[in-house]
Amino acid sequence: MSFDGPQDMRLVTDAEVPVPGRGEVLIRVAAAGVNFADVSKSHGVFGGGPQPPYVAGFEAAGEVVAVGEGINDAQLGAQVVGVGDGAFAEYMALSAPVSVPSGWAAHEALGLLVNWPTALAALKPLGGLTAEQTVVIHAAAGATGQAAVKIAKHYGATVIATASVPKHGAVLALGADHVLDSRGADLAADVLRLTDGAGADLVVESGGTLEASLGAAKRVTGRVVVTGLAGGEAALTNWDLVYRHQVHVIGFNLGVLIQATPHLFGELVGELFGLIAAGVLSPGQPTTYQLADGPKALSELEARATVGKLALLP
Image 1: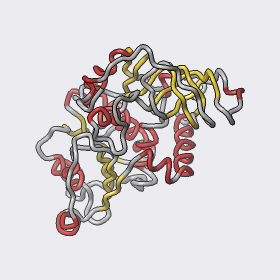
Image 2: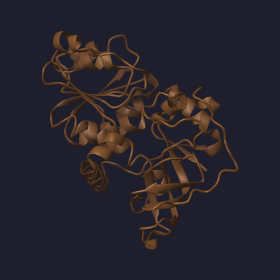
Image 3: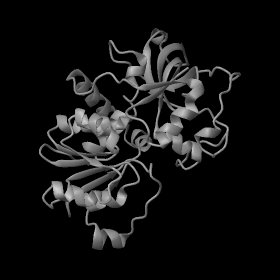
C-alpha cells in the first residue's frame, strides 16, 4: 500500500484478529461503510490520516464477539455500529458503538454514525436551518446528501439539490424541490434564478464547488457549511470575504466535533433516532461489494459513478 490511490490497496489474508482494549468491544464485521474519507486517506490528503501500510476503513457494523476491560459481557452477541480504525476486515475493535436499530440488519445501519450526523450537523446546529428557508445541498445523490435532503424537507426547508444528470431522478424521489446539474456552467447563477436573486440561506458544500457555493449564498446572512474537499482544495482570502462573498463560512469535521463537543454528538445521535422513529430516515440499502473488491468500490466512489451508500462485505 502507498499513497497512489485505491488501486494500490491489497487484500491481506494473514492479519491477526484485533484484541479489544479497555472500553472497547470486538465485532465480527458484517458490513463496512465506504466513505470519501477512505479515498482521501488512500491519496494521503486526509488531515492526520494514517501512514501506509494500514488497515483501511473506519465504519462498520456487526456482532459483538468479545469485550475489553471495563465492558459488561452482557453486550456479547449484540448487533452494533461504530467508527474506529481498520473496518475493511473480518474483525474490528470499536469504542462507544451504538446499537443497530431494532429490526434492522447490520448493513442497513451504515451511515448512522457517519453520513447522517454529518448531514444533520451541517443543517441544524452549524447551519442554523429553519422552516421556510432555502438550502442548497451539493452531491445530493451521495449517502450524506441523500440524508440531508430528507432531513431538510422534514424541517420545512426548500431544497435545491445538485447532482449529475443521470442521478436527478433519484434525488427528486427523495423530495428535493429542484435539482441542478452539478456539472453546470454556473451553479451560483442557477441558484440565484431559483431564489429570485436573493440566494440561499444555507449551502452544504462537500467539495469542488466552493466558489459556486459562496456565490449562491444570500448576502450577509447566508451560511456555507464546508463538510469536505472531495473536489480538491480551494483558496479563500479575507479580501474575498470583504469584497466578493459577504457570507458566513463554517468549517466542519465530524471527528473534531465528536472529540471537542461529545455532548453535541450525543444530541445529534438522539435526534437521529427520533427521525428514525418518525420514519424520516429508514433502513439504508447500500450498494454492496465483496471485501476483495474494496479498491473497485473506492475507485467508483472517487469517480462519482455511484448513488447512495456503499458497503464492503467480508
